[in-house]
Length: 224
Image 1 (cartoon, rainbow, N blue to C red):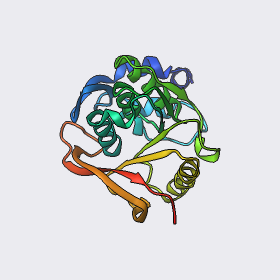
Image 2 (image 1 turned 135 degrees about the vertical axis):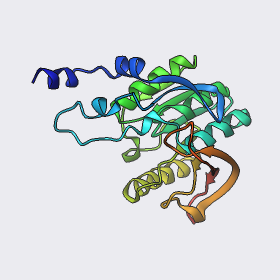
Image 3 (image 1 turned 60 degrees about the vertical axis):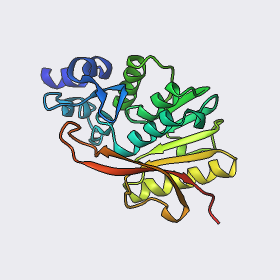
Image 4 (image 1 turned 120 degrees about the vertical axis):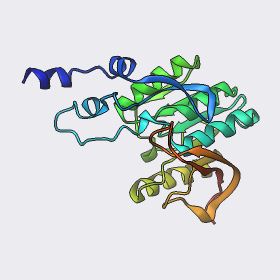
């Protein structure tokens, strides 16, 4: 009983600082993230809320779609310079960090996983950038007051992809630009995508030994 109480009392900020490695992203040496390793013990953190559904720690690794979006923004800072940028489903915050480093006027990271929120807060501090964190699912609401929405790796599950696409359609209708980073997952709205760039990056997982694969940055067009 005492052990369970201690597990529930884990503070995500303290746990991440103590148990994860702050390391450069292999494909983005200018950005460092708190990243999982075999001894991190992240299941303790993910399962500490009694009665809640287990959420895999997706935020603990750089995903390929986020990595290529970040690379694209750093290579082409004019894409975000002086603009208001939303990183939707921010995870580790890699895209938000890149947008801030590339000179965005204001950057917001939206995320609903409390552990991811802790990680991206620490990651933005470690990279010396300012990012506003919104702990809310924005996909059910109206378009936000931004100029660009960046979406990395949110098309791996049908229901999620449908919800995200409907939100992005509302953004497009409001005149907001949409960029998507993805390695080609099943539920991408492919007929509406225009490829802007491709990069080889490691897939999600063991970033030191993961095979390289091609991921792309797309712009999303309005539905006909």
